[in-house]
Amino acid sequence: MLAVSSDLAYVEDAFTWARDRALAWVQTGAAPGNLPSYWAGYPSRPMFYSRDVCHQAAGAHLLGLDAENFAMFRHFARSATAARKWFPIWAFHFDGRIADLDYHDDEHFVREIPAVFDLTYRALEQYDWTGDRRWIDDPDLASYYRHSVGEFVAAHDPDGDGIPEAGGTADIFLGTATYNEREAPLLRAGDGLATQYAVLRKLGRHAEADKLQATYDEWWNGDHFARGITKDGLDFDWGLESHTLAALFGLSGTGERNERFLDYLEEQMESHPPLNIESFSYWPEFLFDHGRDESAWRWTKHLIDSRDDYPEISFTVVEHLVAGLLGLRPDAPNAALTITSHLPAEIKTLTVDELPLGGWSLRIHQEGNHHTEVTVHRGPAPLTVTVNNESNHETHSLAPGMTARVVQPKDHA
Image (cartoon, rainbow, N blue to C red; front, top):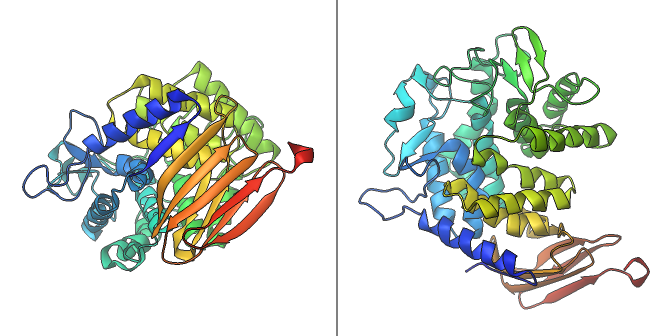
């Protein structure tokens, strides 16, 4: 089982709480007829929701819940039909029944554009973590991936520019452009564009992705990007997910303008934090990705200290404490892993043991941003491990039983 240790007892306590709480949400076998599944939504609703499953999946994998991830993603994939204009159902009970709370009929059910692409992206990300060919070859999933960037876009793209639109009503039962359900009546939103962009890049369709990024570039006002477009034009108000997911999925790019955008996001976090705790759960992910490690750690602690019972919190805390702090980029299909430490000053050492990556089990010991030790306990073949430290970059091929140490050169220590 995955284990975490650190010189900072707070980290160990947080991981123990998050691991145990997340595993307590597992519903596999809890009642006759249950799918392999875990709770993903409000604690008062015994269901799994698409947005929640997407964001809980990485933490679930780290905790060994691959069967649950696969069953739930495939169930969502099967629900996206032509009659529903290729939107997946928003929520299911654990036995696979559609949750009536969020579904009235095929013309009137909760649906949000980012979820369509998020499901594809996060499913393909599970292939990165597991190397399990079912994530690619399963007919229901493969069909869903095609429909999400094909028929779905065509069915919701009235001007033919390749970007799906919502109706601009902000009514979730008629379909919205964003995950932010307190949002303005947007036709398009930054998180919808960002998730579509990420999927296209994941599928190797870079020209189409670049076109979306060029469109987003036009949403810049000199200080930050718009959260979306209404019938009256660009809307530059603070958009929570419609802003933060643009950074998380790389749509905001890199360089000076992106840094200004990140500054704007951090300012808004302070002055206008979200009302719902689950919105906070995205913040460490994109801040780690952009190298803002101290801020990412601050918001990770915010989630930890909340001890909130919303399932997304415990699952994502597991992810942040492992994949976030160590900067893990899995590529199990190609027997590879990249590590880029994001330890903040408060954490001197972090050790993660029995880390699952495809058929491999690993131990990673990190000291600050200058010393990394990787051991391959078990695995089907050598694993290529690339470590990025402060001023050096090393790649090692590690057969099972081997250890590699990457230490910062003394003149940079």
